[in-house]
Amino acid sequence: MCHSLLDDASIWSLLVDIDREIAATIRSQGCPCGGTLHSARYPRKPRGWPREQLGADYQSRLSFCCDRDGCRRRCTPPSVRYFGRRVYLGVVVTLSMALEHGLTPERRQRLVGQIGVDPRTLTRWFRWWRMQLPATRTWRELQGQFACALDPARLPDTLLRLVQGDDSVQRLIRFLALLMPLSTDSCPHCPRVALKPQKMPV
Ligand SMILES: [Zn+2]
Image (tube, rainbow, N blue to C red; front, side):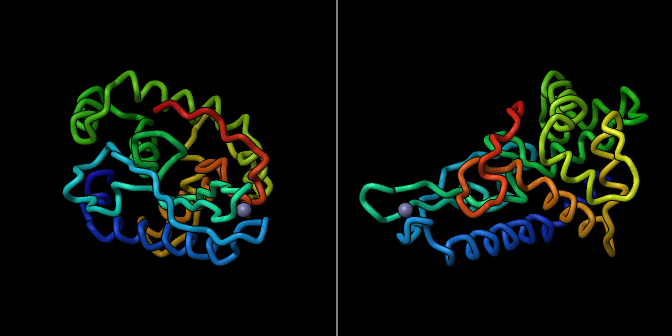
């Protein structure tokens, strides 16, 4: 599932489009001080998928800076592509862990080779999904959105199964959108801006 889904180039461009749309909305609201937000992208070198397939849009993260002297506030909109400062793409961190249940040593080894991730990193991601994410405000708020109790011991599968969509791509994108509050700690328009995102292992 992981490979075939991500092999479809459309998912990568779709994620760029969503991030652009979110960023445009944030930018149109301007800085809370009344200043104008100017583009001030962060360079990024994401891991987890071949860069030539990701394209130039994945070499930066959309971000803004207020133009007013005395403010110059930084505003980094939420993203469906990046999990905070983590170097691996959110979609990779999600799908590699979603396959965790029942993964045989052979399949795991193949997956590790495909996404080029160290097994120790996979272990850190595992801990993050199961122990750190459930301690966040974002998680508590998510639980309120679903009628049934979410079992943190089976993350991210627990949440992936509940997200509705016409196909796997749509469900995955909606899943990433649910976790977007964790993708930034410097967006004055994000209601959860006061919340420091959980430290995410790279
Ligand atoms: Zn400002």
